[in-house]
Length: 467
Image (cartoon, rainbow, N blue to C red; front, side):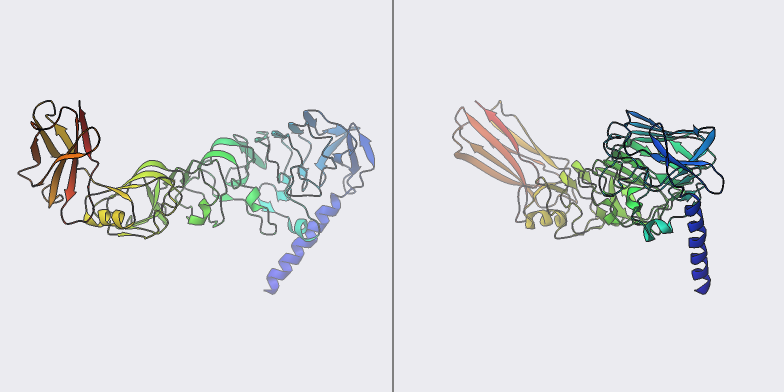
């Protein structure tokens, strides 16, 4: 323990030295910037002039009076009015350090500062970005202890891309996303990025700041416009907190992603989840999330629509799996023998259960849901003659025992004229009714019942109209 304290104190001392060396007095003015000199080297560090006015492009200077500009000071010194039109920021090759909060509001961290900023171009010389030294080591203790500083790119909601020079030895970028040089660490995803985000296979970790509370604003979390996210198999990602990505429709979780249901909070538009084959927590099927052994369905994306086919071999559907989902039909395999009482709570549509077993049909009936006997159907033929025939299609001898066909005939006003019920089996899958005494205009409705259930029909009725 003492050794840890010594290392901690030593780190603070070193950091204070770094900050002191990068704390010049900004007493000089040059073309919209104020600047000062490092005591140790005499090189220049700049911040913006509070009274200057910038257009759509802000170019930080590379040289001033023949001396290299090596750093952008903490909280760049700009004000909201003189940067309100800035869309692109260019950081030249001589600059080595981008200080804390350069693009962050100096008084209100939760308020956007550069309100129009879309692109940041970083030169070859930058090796420190708000304490991320040489793309490897985090030095940011003082940023939270002594000053209310946020990361350099904190709360820039319009920023779409960060581009790093290929000659930079510390950082790199792929499709506007910031990484360390060898692309093993994800550092920052611009919050205005949209569309599909695929992290390179080389990425093994997400930059984590142990001393500040800004991690949720550094990686892909809280990106409001990304529709698809692909996490590579090599990425070791373990975070229970919400992704909070409201536009996200599809996500691929890699082999080393630790999966928590809480991570999908704030992803109300999510329609499909994919999981790496070697993930130790879960598997996916038809966009849904299952336990690793495939026996338990544990999560359905909230915006999945239409028909949902449960994976063969599933035995249990957990409570609240389909909560607030938009599915219309659920097809249950014969293996399902347990469904949580609240599994379908809050569904946006009336859900129809398709099942070939009494458990699934009984669950639907007891929970006030529509239901259909899986695979079996009824059809009507012969309406042009004096006899109508109703058939049970796809009848299965073992599955569909104790079923009866029901034929009902109604007049044009809906009054019942004739009815017939006949039990069917493997040798007799149809029933006929004589219509010779029926008026010219009538409606025939055919239904299939299961005799040992209190619920009927067991599939969608078939109907024809004759005039």
